[in-house]
Image 1: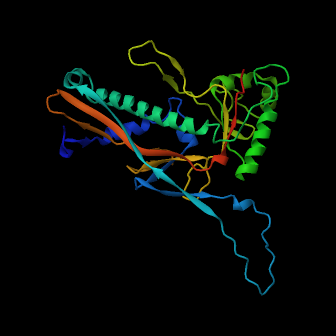
Image 2 (image 1 turned 180 degrees about the vertical axis):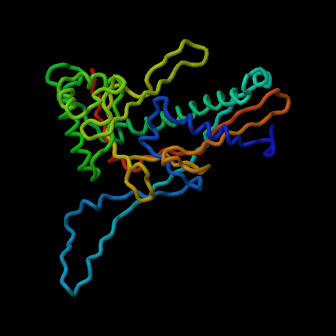
Image 3 (image 1 turned 45 degrees about the horizontal axis):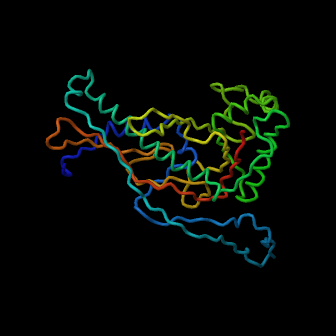
Length: 315
């Protein structure tokens, strides 16, 4: 096995890993922004909705001090889990490549995608959990044709969301199958064609509908075991629409749906991406190098009230 001195952190590949961390239909970073931490485990605050209290006395006389208010908190714990993968690149492959760095970059690309797939699945499982997240099922399916009231369903969900969370949702996650139904709905088209110059973007919905930023998850996953016929499907369920409130750059006192707590390995880029260290090393007896990427992370729901599921919207 390699010793610590045999392991080299490749800065170029680490930077390349950040670039490859975007796109691919992954939306986990948009729902659960990255919060860098230095400790492997610690506590974070969970805030009660004291801002909505309406019984606070604000009037004072000229000789009185201002009335003091406070907020209540509880705490929850995060525990970072190490996730890492490696890929072997032979000396022969590097020797035959026109650009020797390219095989290592291809390995990095593969590793980052697999690591991000794991993050995507874990965040998805948290936000579509109907046992912990408030949800409702429309009386009429959105692809039923007659009597479809998509706008009313979303308005009702937004109102229930606001009452529970104390804020309005700012993101709506719409799976591709649902987006295709919504864009063909005559009422929705009529509502947005006069307000959106880009009615359809890449054949889908505009960036904003009903004052909610549209997020369409496009990640695909093969669920078949290695060596068997591929079974490729959308990673996100095609019948769940999710409303969320997401603070773009959450701090320790920010109310947001959830976060990815990650061990600090570099500077954050716009509060979304963090450097993924990529290492390379040789193992005695093997003619080549291992390229290894990984990070420590815990995906946590900070405020379950900042998520709402419209369940089973399609037949």
